[in-house]
Length: 151
Image (tube, rainbow, N blue to C red):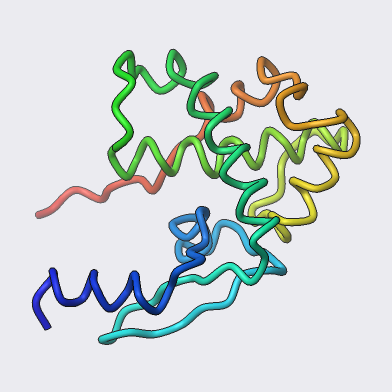
């Protein structure tokens, strides 16, 4: 299957795509509203909640806006490289977890994105009122997969 045909079918099948798909597929987070599906020997993640997807979109937009300095991205480009997307997604979720649970370390795997985002929105009366300076510390500290050298 060529890439254009794959992407067309993917969009048709997954009209309510999970915005944290990369994090879920990498095993670093889960969501109670996410459902995996398979297409042409590849995995995708579908969101079963339009309200949840809307909240996640709002959170990601805010994280991207507040994390520009931390990820060293001065441009307002809508397309970020994979590693920077992962830093924002996973680092942002871990920062949000630390903020809400007041623990020393974030978990290795964030259990439920939907629940975490809902708790944050309720506790702070909206996602735009989150203390992003605390959350962005985890975005800056996030270390992606360490590449092994080729020999």
